[in-house]
Length: 294
Image 1 (cartoon, rainbow, N blue to C red):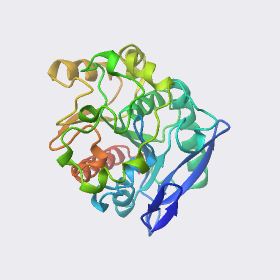
Image 2: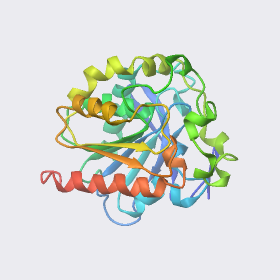
Image 3: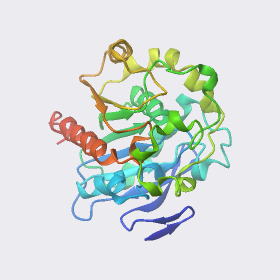
Image 4: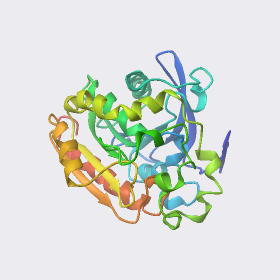
């Protein structure tokens, strides 16, 4: 086990730092043990969490970092701006478009120094999904293969007044759903995953319906939308999903998946392995559909 400032990590995962637009971002990295990577998986966490959301500390089966590397991918889980190493400089975080720019700069720095295989595939959760979609809308290179976003719709299923600074363990039912969906050690280890939510993120969640109307039509890569069975923050009935997919008018392919036995924090639950395998299978489809990138 490798020690970091939040405690031990599995031996296949190591901390990293990147400079992006003059900002130091921290994160976690896992790489294939043999050969060049098939692609880079960029993982972006949601509000009130950090990159350890993808590290599976409560049970090895739920780690995206580990399973991705075993399947031949380099997995880079970033602490988004306002979290981890950047929290001191950005105590209130960054607004959505600024975060998207910072994330693109971080990926550019990383891929300039590491083998990237066929390109970059983004797997993002909740507020991280909004950042991922905004980043994709302004991604000028052809290296973006596709993306899977979870825990993010267009229409809130709760009153906007419930959107506040509480992340992590706050709003327990909304964020987690039934607790039996998670390995028992999840909540004992939650202190290593949970961080304060930067205040600038709150207004973006409330204004997402307006912002997404401008962002989503500019996404030009395949998109997979994953909704947990017990997703409670965002409406995901047929009407809401029809509206969401219609906005992704430039995406060559849009796939919707409903994940059973899962709460909002999908990548921390028992269903994480099934979710990560499905998301990585979609990455393979994106890679195989683009002969230029193979």
